[in-house]
Structures are given as structure tokens and as C-alpha cells.
Image 1: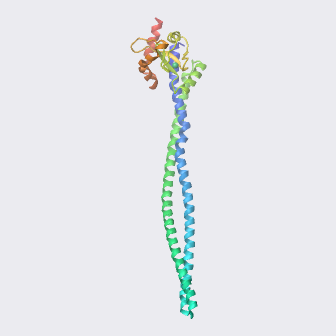
Image 2: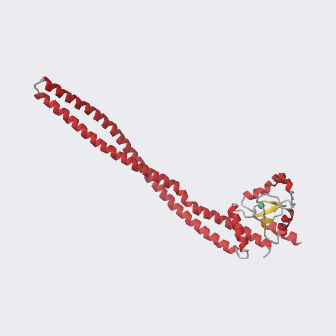
Image 3: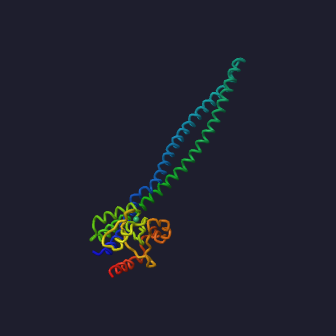
Length: 285
Ligand SMILES: [Zn+2]
């Protein structure tokens, strides 16, 4: 196979592999999308259970206090009735003290009941609100789960398509070259094959030795950038002139911004194919 054809295949493969990596990562990360919401729900439920315990405790306290109030009332009423039957000053004083003490106890218990009842009502309201919130969160989470599983299914389908496309483009490629490209794509954010401009790698913007750049230009074998390990191909510059840099001229690399943009973008532009055909003719002449 001609080298230009191999390079074209590698570029196609790069797009497939980069997309495959993206889809695989998305599939792996998918469950994490729910974890925040799942944690929130678990926290809400835990809080609800704790609050409910407090609610039950408060309810129990109220019952106890009401019984105490009943006792105090009973004691006071009994002493008040006994007042009708006393005969001595001493009995009077004893009963009077009993009535006073029971009355005070009643007052204290009533206050406590009021306080506890306020807490009880607040807790009751809180629980009602939290219950609604939990139900709402549960519903949202379930909806998201359904949606996410649909998304995962679609992604798995895309992954299968990509694998098929990968198999379709692979024949004729050296398995070692393919393996290297796969590895570079994983470590270099999806870009494993880049053009050189003059003697500059547009992947890492390092100046390559002139002889090295020449090998890329000749294009009779796969050449890897010695700095970023990407596969290199020759692409004639837009103005038809290649700019060669000496290693000392690194300062003027800023002029290459146009080519650096290419790295940030989606890879090659639509002109690449025709450019490459031109190249081929260039050195076939
Ligand atoms: Zn490089």
C-alpha cells in the first residue's frame, strides 16, 4: 500500500479510536452521574430516620407529662376537697401546703407540655416536608436512571459501530503501527497523527532535525515525532511555502499560531485530502 494511503487510513483510524475512547469513558463515567443524587437521597433518608426517632421520643415525653399533670391536678383537687373536713389549724396548714405544691407542679408541667408540644408540632411539620422531598428526589432519581440507561444503551450501540468501523479500516495496517497509534491517542487527548509544517511538529511544536523532517516529506515509512511520539505526515502550507526553523529560532514559533489552532480543532480540515494528493504529485515529479 502507498504511504499516503496508509496515512489516510491512520487518520481515519485516529478519528474512530478517539471517538471510541470518548464513548468508553462516557460509559464508564455514567454511574458517577447518579452518585451525587444517590448520596443526597441517602442523606435525606438518614436525616428523616433520626428526626422520626426524635419525634417518637417527643410524643412519648408528652404522654408522660400529661400523666404527671393529671396526677398533680388529682392531688390538688383531693386536697381541696379535704379542706371541707379539717378541724385544726395544723391540718389546714398541711393541706394548704399540699395544694400550693400541687398547683406549682401543675404550672411547671403545663409549661413543659407547651414547650414539648411546640417541638412535637415542628417535628411533625418537618417530617411531612422531608417526606415529600424524599419522594420527589426518589422520583427524579428513577427518571434519571431510566434516561441514563437509555443513553448507555445508545452509547454501547455507537461503540459497536465504532468497533466495526475500526475493523473495516484496519486491514493493510501494520498491527504494531496501529497499537502505537492507539496508545498515543490515549495519552495525547485523541491526537495521534499530525502534520509537520516545515520542520516543526504541529502536535508538540518542537523543531525537528532537518533530516528527520525530510524523511517525513519523502514519506516512504511511518515516522514518529521524537518529542511527542505522534505519527507525522507532510502537509504543504497554505501559501505553498515551507518554513524551516533552526533550533535556535524557537522564539519565532509564535508565528505558527495558525498551525497550532489545528491541534485545538477537530483535526484536519476538508482540504487535507487534496493537499495530500498534491504532495504525492510533488514528489512523484
Ligand atoms: Zn511532536
